Amino acid sequence: MNAGVHAPAIRLVNLTLGYDRRPAVHHLDGEIAPGEGLAVCGPNGAGKSTLLKGIAGLLAPLGGAIDFAGASRRATAYLPQVVEIDRAFPINVRDFVAMGALARIGLWAALNAAERARVAAAIETVGLVGFESRTLETLSGGQMQRALFARLIVQDRPIVLLDEPFGAIDEATIDDLLTLIARWRTEGRSVVAVLHELDIVRRAFPRTLLLARERIFWGDTRDALCQENLLRARAMSEAFDEGARECLRDNDHDAQDKPHVH
Figure 1 (cartoon, rainbow, N blue to C red):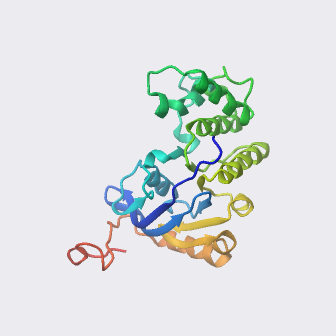
Figure 2: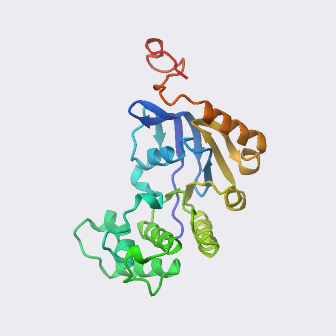
Figure 3: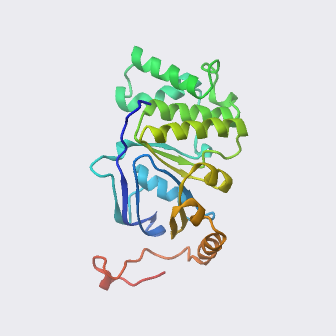
């Protein structure tokens, strides 16, 4: 990635996200600054992955807005959970990493010398030199995650969204990828990561959004992950009505015409 890139701030305004008109994230307000490292934490089913999909543009809001301060969602690079990736597809590491360039070169164009150099540099950065011709299905969990991060490098976007990037991988890979994340932040890129590993959050992410369908806490990680907040998040998540429809605040448009259901 090129140094000196300035990420646009992300502003969430009364954001509600969900599926089939059933909300998974309610009325969320907050801002993510350029160069910020934000962890999104919470119990299972708290809406963490849903939030990332909304920011990435994969899920339209049920209400509210996601404001990129004048930029578009093309400013985002999104790494899904590894279980969502079909590793049986017959593609080698070099070609997989090169997919990060598609937005620049188009679907059918061949890589030019500059793009080939970019791909090679990304593979070297994540420590996969010598694996270029290996297919994805032959990679270990840590190697696969390195390939995914290499593809993010080639994408070269100012906002990086990571959904559970450290699950079931070795400590050496975690350390290397955390180093890369720190470098992205010094370049002015915003990194938003859904994480379950609270030790990694405390170690590497200065700010945390603790989510349980609604915002429990958004701020300094030390405060966000205190025992009181963690217990509150779990209690709220367990009490949530899975069958509830979306609700509106009293000052929302047409609130008088729709009942509150949560």
